[in-house]
Image (cartoon, rainbow, N blue to C red; front, side, top):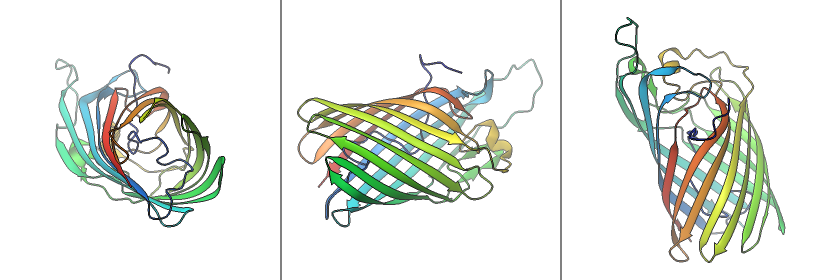
Length: 279
């Protein structure tokens, strides 16, 4: 299904990042980058279905991202998301008797991720390898179908390649996610191109892909009715990012993400904003 006009994808662990944060670039020994951001998403349909959900679902996130250079080639990164979930009034026909989940609210930490990245080559072309882990921590309200993360431990090795100048950057990465708890393994890939029309301002176009191999056997129960962090989620997504530095250390990021296609993921606008500090 392709609905480019207003369909957007909730990419749960991506907030807009300043140019050169992440990607194959090393932070440099003793240098770092951090950002605190919010992501807002409300939906009543999924990309893989033409019918509406039982209730409107709101999935908002307050997220802390940080990276630090242990050496000139080793960089550690971490993501700490805190989720605010809720479901609204029933969307089902009141004249047709149907069983639906009760409305509810839930707040709690989402899956915490840590990664170690090693930059093999950084002269013009930058080439790096990364090992990402995601913890299976989450809060759950099973009666209302609310869960703040996946019930799965993830190990995702990946390769990253990129290049950049004072006015342009581009990078791509490709990873393979191994997941526990009966969840399907995934192929993850990203492509991002950025341009700076004037000093301290960057704009970027991002493409993100997650492809479930559908080799898992987990049974989701009530969570499947809200699609909050369920098995076999796939998407082909795009995003537009803007970043402005107030000075050499502080700045603001905003972004919006959309989807060309997807399965078991939200069909509704996702908006992100964050403030960052680098040293």
